[in-house]
Length: 408
Image 1: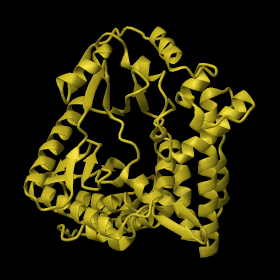
Image 2: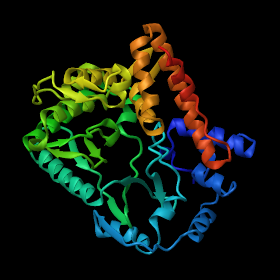
Image 3: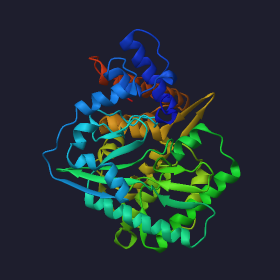
Image 4: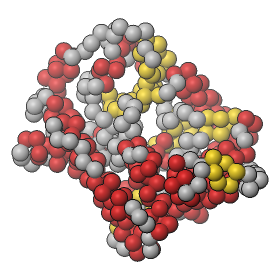
């Protein structure tokens, strides 16, 4: 039996193919592997599932830290009971990165796949606050259940059904059943039926309005945090941070996150479609002449330590202009994907150069810059993956592109 094809996105298939070729000095077809290429590499070309599991079991380490567990069911709790005795943190070091996405995940926290038997797979994300994450998850569960009971949408919303939160010492992890490609990836990969897309947009708009009526605001309403069922009748939510009480949000905070929630959809929907998701939500007016401390991006862009609120909000429009889908002749540049990678893998000084390029380059040069940047990001990610399995150092193609902005 071959590896679950959903575990590897097209990008990761390409990157692993290059990595395998480099390490073993021959072309190895990813599709023919019986185990994830991560195990194939670490275990020196062992492709037997039985032997792979034996190797993993020998590397289990008992935990010396206090363990707390909250789960969706007794069955799920029992399935992961091994981590009451053995260290989850150490076990995750044996596991592959999340390789189903089209981009590497934040390297500053654990984001990985997990399996105990090479048959059932789970996604693991390290979370900042165990208790807060649990509260948000349960609040969104109640919210989606109440939303569905109103029968105001043809599409249902739910949270992921099989999950467990494990805290080991001071580190906490959310583990949920692996569901395949996200809604964002579906929209990138497939030409979605217009009627289906319209119903999804209507559903998300109704959910945003319903949340508002419940005085709740889910900041991370984003296509990368959703999965669409095969029958297109249910959307499953997978991220449980940043749920706010609307009565406790300042107008400026609300305007700021309203703008950013639009950016989350920039790679896969056009402006008119995004507007429909947030149609009829409340709007806020504030004194835009009030002076604010500039963040690092704004300092580099405006060359000022303080800027007025209008400039602060206008800068978010620049973010939206960068972090969107750019169709350039026969090429597509996914700006939000680039923005995520820069935020996770590069400094704010590096990322701010994108905005200087947007300001100073001609339209033609800007388009060329975006194409170069996307190519550099992909090359850098591939080389990052190679560096995990070899003694080769990480490369810095992205900075080579960004440094061309100097002096502009």
